[in-house]
Every structure is written in structure tokens, then in C-alpha cells.
Image (cartoon, rainbow, N blue to C red; front, top):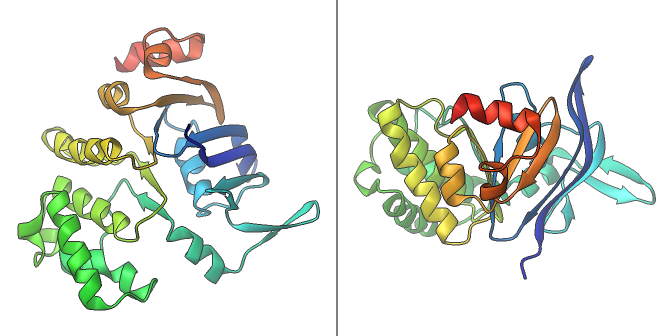
Length: 254
């Protein structure tokens, strides 16, 4: 039986007077794909950013593979880790952003090897060999020497996925990975994510792609107003939602 790779417990997060996360609880089991749906402003992206400590929680806690993210516990108190320790944790939690975030001055290959060489101190030769395999996996072997501006949006996002995989993370987070793409390019990115899912990669994917959620997710989570309204297998949440808010959302996107 799979064990929990991610545990989110009673997480609250506010920006000023705006409460963005209201006591979120979530478990993600090892090797499974959790897809998070919900309207804009529901807290989906903020939840992802707290999981790798890009945003600090106001209260509650998060673990990845049994280790507290961003904090150490002493007695009943949590103390924030030093930035160096947080960065080390982030090497275990890959993050694929909506807008690619590639380094424009680096080639595709150098984008992929930058973190393994700089953060993990891997020999460049080893990093290049691994990167070439990853670029083949995402269908971009012929683009290793290209620069991001020479690629389509879909190709840039596939490079971003290869870059995240280069650190061999325990968990991959995707924040609306297709929302910045032209519609005809969405499929090529989703195909790569589907391949990762089939290989047993633990993933949390924030997306509006309902068909993808139905096909790939082990668990679908619907968020609204900073809280998880309901969660369960796709057949339950998408085809027979229990809550009116979920039904109203799905009626607009299906």
C-alpha cells in the first residue's frame, strides 16, 4: 500500500487581511497524481507554493516524505530553517511554473544541467548525460543547443519539466502548466505529464484541464475560497460531485 508522500495539516495563509488558505488538510500518497481544480483566487497556487516553502505558512505544517518543509520542530514550536537548508529541501520538490521561468541566456541543455551542477555539485559530464536522456524523454533531443526564445511555448514548458526532473525530486508540483500555451500546444505538454504519471512519479497538478484530470488523476481536489470543498476519485468528484459549489464550477468548465 502506498504511503503519504505529502501531508498538509491545518495550513493557514493570509496576505494582509486576505485569508488565502483556511485550514487546508491534504494527503498525497507516494506514486499518485493529485489534480487540484477550482476557480481563480481559490488558493490553489498558494497551496502549491507553501508545499515547497516559496510561501511561508501562518499556521499548520507540511511534510514531504516525512520531513517538515521549511521548519524544524523543537518541543511544541516550529522554527524556520535557514535559507540554505530550505534550498536543499527544494531540490527534492520539483516545481514547474505557469510561465516556464527558463534562463533566457542559457541553451536548453544548460538550463537543464544548471541546478544539478550548481545545487547538487554533480560533475558536468554526468549532468549532461542525464540531461540528454531527459530531453529525449520530453521529445526535445534536437533542441539541446537552442535558446528559449527559439522555442514554442509548448517546447519551453517541456524543457521546464526536464529541468525539474534533473534534480530527481521526490515530488513534482505543476502550477497550471498549460494555461500560458496556445490551445494547439497543450496536448504535447499534457502527454509528457501523462508519461510521468504512468511511470509512478508523485505529482500535484493545478490545472483547468478537466479531461486530463479525468484520465490521469488518482485524486481530484476541488478548492474554493481557500478551502478544500471536496476530494476523491475523478469519477466521484467530476461525475457525481456532492457539493453545490463543485457542481456550479464544473457546469461552467465542462
